[in-house]
Length: 271
Image (cartoon, rainbow, N blue to C red; front, top):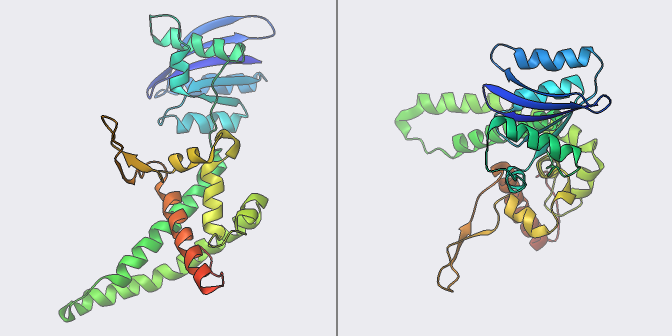
């Protein structure tokens, strides 16, 4: 297997590699814009070489992650803060960073974090698409219109009629995906939790074991109070609203619906 430490930048990457079978090692810079990086990894695939890549988490590497998934290569994404803490040398440069990532993988000391797979990200787009359309529909339905705005009112109502079938189609797709996953079906046994909320929770939270405590999940989705404490005085404010806004919205909606349904003594609905 080839172990590759990648110091990733939007326009290029610096790699430090090692062939475990032969001990061959080396370093190289690969440009992204001219296809040099993609050619390098596709050549490895054609040669039948197994590859494990390690890199720090970044928001600019989606195409690279998709490429490695397509080629069937293993990708480890590391926590940047923990990787920084493991850096011994004071000289920080691209080559040293790539060597560090390679060494951490070889020593089984790489601070790997959970990363959603491409199909997970694609399913999230289904949830976001439906959510945005529902928001638009809600605004249209609640928009106050004066009598003279009849044309505007009519066009908005026509738009509403066109949106409803699309939302229903997306809702049916969500329900089909939810039925494929036992963990989603289990979450749906909770009052107020339907296929949409349950599927979003599973896709966004991912592997629950990466959170040692339940409080960390609340922090992850921004449902803990913001804090501005000083001089021994604790001041708590509104929830922090950090993390995934879609999941936070759905969880709040599910909690409200579950509480309302409990007061009525019945649970129903699809949220």
